[in-house]
Image 1: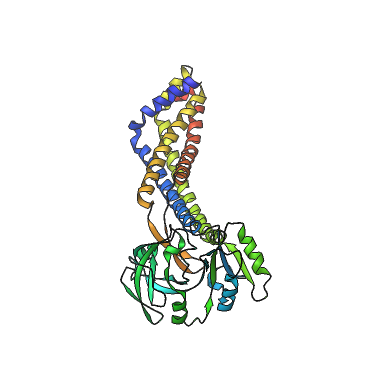
Image 2 (image 1 turned 30 degrees about the horizontal axis):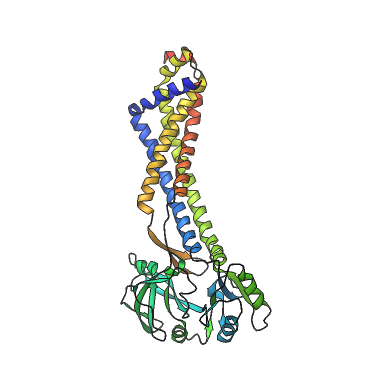
Length: 392
């Protein structure tokens, strides 16, 4: 049977150019579905990467108990001072490696659309760079504490007007100067504007208040030790977790939305692609009715015929999958976009990531669609009565 299947399959594949019209329709249909699926998965991969790269396992994020996001948290200066005295927080040259932070949401307009978006303006401590492993200034310089100066993340600089080096922004009734652009390894911080926390407190009348503290510890297992040290203090009630866990929880909301919406679109388009594949393969079987009947008459079984039809469908599916995947890769990989982070109601900039796993998933889906489209025509060809086929 294997020899018969190979012989019939090779004959089918050689005849594809004679049926280029229906075959092209099937290939393009599958390519379109695969392209949409790869783009959807690339959004998920890029968003998850932006958040996962934001979270270090050896950096504790301390917020008020019950707060699922920094925006809803609150700590006063006295509490911050007590927390920074915790033994588990690392010190360098007598300096506590912790950054008390707060932020406000400001309106900036998108570069291309001009639509206003909520962008975090974050006030940070002098050790903000020490608790972020990948932080570095890539243009200009660090802001000077005490002055109305800003540094902007690369994502914010790429997506919003007024975020270029040297620009002046009017925020909160105050004029701010952009003095630097920073990179943080693709993390969520690159969607933000940073300034001195004390200056931001005064500009937005926040008093001596903060929303969170980032603190570096010796190792990930010291996060729980730090939580135990703070848990017994009656002066505050805080939640201590690693940055990694915090951002992993934030990623769930948007990835669920994108997955469901993208899934519905892909399934609907997939149904159309299956019908296209069915049409192509039924046309191929119809055009080869006498040929199939002749093969059956000289001793070829029904199974090789089914295998040959499925193989032809899979080849078309593979071609369509590769075309769709390649088009999505060339179009979307590295494409920078921004979306609303539902946990913080602010814009998050991230890059689409068309990874090998994403491409494999897209091509695999294309092959599955082609296989579904080939099963019916293959069975019909195998069950075709020899006498009816010879009379056709």
